[in-house]
Length: 303
Image (cartoon, rainbow, N blue to C red):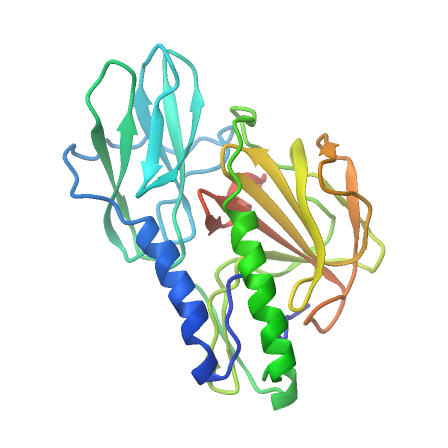
């Protein structure tokens, strides 16, 4: 189903005079991912193989898989000053880098620090990608925020900014193959840009899966519940932490069956599909976040 208002925290209210605060937040997140001038030429990345997840897709909203080489201990990697997920072993370490949707095509880099070695930069190229655009005309009351709703939105946005900054030492499996959290048709894809009444919104930050109210939502990987709530745009929501800056979010839930601190295994239920928040019908909105960048969930699941 289609959102009348995309989920927090990616989108600002339609009213242009009220967008500056959120656009500033987006700009700040983009700046945090800006790399220093690259010192090492980009290594040619191996072709994506069917049994490697997430699949590499070096585009805005995609994932870069960058070889860090061998090291006795796990190296540290950073996109700007934000830690990047590093997986592998002493023979071969790999940085799994989330590329923000606001990234301009061109050269990017990460900083790598390994014990006993000088700090270095690893460069990679972000290719352009044209996501689909959808233009809709809706009743103004469904998109304009009252002062009370805007105050609630800002408060929730600030809270969720803190949730998105979660970083734990827990490490996910090397193979990040995710289970689709609910069966159903993909009703809206990642990156879709909607224009309501001639005013553009930020791109869709996740994958929408059409399913009936009450359908169980299952954990796609082992994870720990770090936030639950009933939010203005997102409705019933659960956030899972899978470790190392890999987070997932589930929105518009009719029921939440977990609490903060619960540890889940792959396939365990966490909630039920609903139509809460700013939506037109029941479905699951599912987002995947890497190093504070929303990335395409399709890269983590079988085609």
